[in-house]
Picture (cartoon, rainbow, N blue to C red):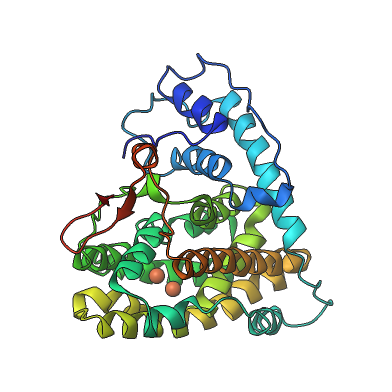
Amino acid sequence: MRLPAARGPLTDELITALRQPAGSVPLFGAGLALDPPTAALADDDLQLGLWTCYELHYAGFTDAQPGWEWEPELMSWTRALEDLFSSALRSCVSPAPMPAGESIAEHLRALIDADSGPELARHLQSNATAAEWREFVTHRSIYHLKEADPHSWAIPRLRGKAKAALVEIQSDEYGAGSVSRMHSELFRATMRSLGLDDSYGYYLDQAPGVTLAISNLMSYFGLHRENRGALVGHLAAFEMTSSTPNRRYGKGLRRLGGDAAATRFYDEHVTADALHEQLAAHDLCGSLVADEPELADDVLFGAACALHLDNLFAAHLLGCWESGHSSLRMTETEQLTGCQIVVTATGTGAVVG
Ligand SMILES: [Fe+2]
Ligand SMILES: [Fe+2]
């Protein structure tokens, strides 16, 4: 993957620097203030900046100079963005603390049952057009093409039953030894069936901040040991809210003529996540909180953050579609020419006037 196009002063500074030898360019964090601060959760420039810094720990960029991953100046630059992201999350998400001695699994279930976000899955099942479906899959490619990787950061940070439960979940996510069954590979098949390009990061420039924030949240939790409770809580919320919407997604794609290859990613999650939800809530979160009771509130915070960002994402898509707009970002060229991206059935990123 190549470095993305800049979206503002932060990413302009960052991406220019990453093309130079590591450490040879000072980083100032230009314009590090957002009004209101909660705008950080969907800010294009900040979220792309974070995503780019984090990506140095994943697949990286072919046109970034080596050595930046652990460059001290970049780490403090990243930290400044993380502080804005974290403050915004704390402002928006504050689940009630868990009373000592109660079950974390029950509290996770109560948190999820109390959530009433926009009905994106229902829309995709019953009403979405093929173009809206392609947009949805384009957004989701930012995470699903590296599905499970961010939660793997927790493996060396856990012990005993919690570690075993996480490894069992992750093994399924990675296909249990079979590349063709890896969830990221199943998603690539879904993309291809919709005429989308399944290359890793292909649609990064089209993904708005609200989409990048979903991946950034996992990386932020995953790359800091102190956030291990939030990371497993996040995974639990993922798994516990997966089966029903994935059943709807599968039905939605079949309604539009999707074949077994198109829907396998979603069908697989209906069954796999019915088990993963139990593993995550009881064996993973339950065991971690039994060992480290002081992490209970972090687990709930991570779960609540997952729900909140998913709701922002759903509201963005439904709001755009309701008003007749694409939910994807227009590239600079398209903005200049007043064109809009339309992902076609036969190709990708086609532009129409
Ligand atoms: Fe999965
Ligand atoms: Fe899962």
